[in-house]
Each structure stands twice: as structure tokens, then as C-alpha cells.
Image 1 (cartoon, rainbow, N blue to C red):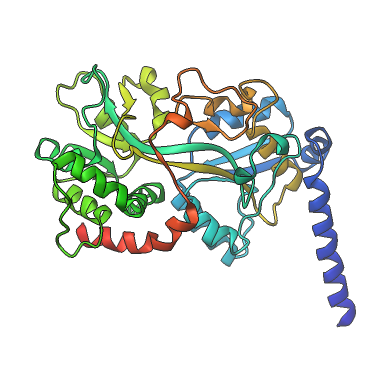
Image 2 (cartoon, rainbow, N blue to C red):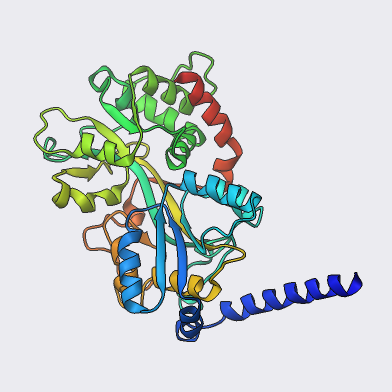
Length: 370
């Protein structure tokens, strides 16, 4: 029995030492080992991962990148169920919804960090721990610029609760997609700013009603009462808001970076940046490892590739994300020429730990309104 236990301990130590050794290796050192593994599985919360797959396989012949596009909410559920069933799952996890990822996945060792040595010196510490953030993304207010050539028709979030916007504000159901629940939670966390914005919109201090405890809850209540339209996907929001040829289009919360599809899909999406007190949220997109990846070298090589090469724009690995509305966490990548500078963007940058504390409470609050 003691010999069996000792052998298991030795194997665990050897596995740990091997992982630590891989963590320090360059892409060139990882490559022959990754080619022996032959495959890497990636879960990703964005359809853009298909373009990464094609570029990765072109850069590293002999390694099959298998990508599975699913929302962060779906990923979280799948990773938990695979861990319970002792199934291997993905090697690499590309995911948002930081409050849940950090409190439920990282805290329970269901995903683990990896920072490629090549980029460690050009990513700020806040974006390296507890997980590596590849970029910052958004859920913000967007409008149709063809129908509103002079700029956003909304200057204050509280405008969305006024009669002229009744039934004309659209978003993905926050009880179905975590990033949108994070948006609603941030509005509650920023209740002091929401109260100030209310007075600016209506010329009087806010008066709470219906048992609401703060201005954020009051805003959400009033927004739902104004016939907020809830849909199942971001694409539905984009099409409804951005489709050209509309005389009186709705406005909605979606991703600033989805403007990249305007030309291909016939949209006229534009971000409403000049909004009091904010146009929405900015949040990290994480890259993480399965703690027991089937292809440990290929997994690290994939993360290295997704962080971009050493060119000013990040090359093929980062190309799908080098768009206005996504901000790279690498300080040596040149900002996109069409992007609003992060310092000038009105979105609130979320604090995941604070969001996690009241997220379930906000979900219950919204459930009672639906």
C-alpha cells in the first residue's frame, strides 16, 4: 500500500514539475512536443475563434486545433459537469464573465493560469493574475448611425426609461448570458452615479419606489416597465439595432467590437460613448488552461499564438481581435486607428470580486421583474 501511495505521489510531483518546465519554455521549444501531441481543443466564447484555428494550423502544420464556440455561460456549466464526470474537456479555455470564472472556476482549480514567457513583460500585472487577460471587451449601448447621423439619440441612461423609448430598447436576457447580468449588476454597484444621472435627466432628486433600495435597482425596474425587449443572442440585438433602412430603429446593449461586421452584414452600428454616467461595461477576456490538459504543450502554444506575435498589430493570432472595440492587454500592440482610446471610453471597467458579491441578488431581482 505504501509503495502504491508513494508511486502516486511521485507521479503527481513529476506531472507538476513537467508543467512548470513547460511554463518556462518558448514557443520554439514547445513546438516539437506539441507536434507529437498532434491536437489541441479550445473552448471559446467568440465565433472569431474559427479564424484563429485556420491561422494556427497554417502556422503550425501537424497540429489540429479543434475549436468549440459557446457562450461563457455555457462554458462554465460544461467545465463544471466535465470535472464532476472526470471527463477531459478542452485544453484551452477562452472565456469572459470574470465574476463567475474567478469565484467558481479558478477558486475550485477547474482552470489554471498560464502566461507565455514571451509576453510576460508587456502585460500589466492586473491582467496576468489570477488569469491572463488577452483583451478587454464590452457590453455597451449601441445605436444606428444611419438613422442618427448627428450622433447618439441617447445622452443619459435614464433616457431609456422615457416614453419615447418604450419598447425600443433591446438586449440579451441577462438571466441567460452572464456578461449582460454583469452589466445589470454594475448598474446597481454604481447606484450613486445613477442617482446623480437621474437628477441630470429629470431635474429633481430620485425617489425610490416599489421597494427598490437604490438608484440602480430603480433604473432596472423602470427599464423593464418601459417594455425592455429581451432576446436570445447578441446577433439579434445587432440586427435589430443596426439594420440599414430603418426610420426609427431601436437602441440596444451589445459589443462595441461588433461594428467590425457593419459592411459584411449591412449594419450601421455605432457606440454611444457620450452617455451619462456610462454606456455600459468593459471586462476582460481570459485565456486559461485545463489543470490536466490532454495536450499540455499544444495548449500553451495555442495561448502564446492567441496573444499575438511580436508585430505592432499582433499578427495572425491576434488579427480577429485587432478591431475597434477590443483593447489588447499587451502594451506593445499599437491601438487600432478607429478605436476610441480606453482612457476616453465611458464604459465602467468591472471589478469582478465586487460583481460576484451581489450578482445572484441582482439575478433574483431581475427574475422578479420578468
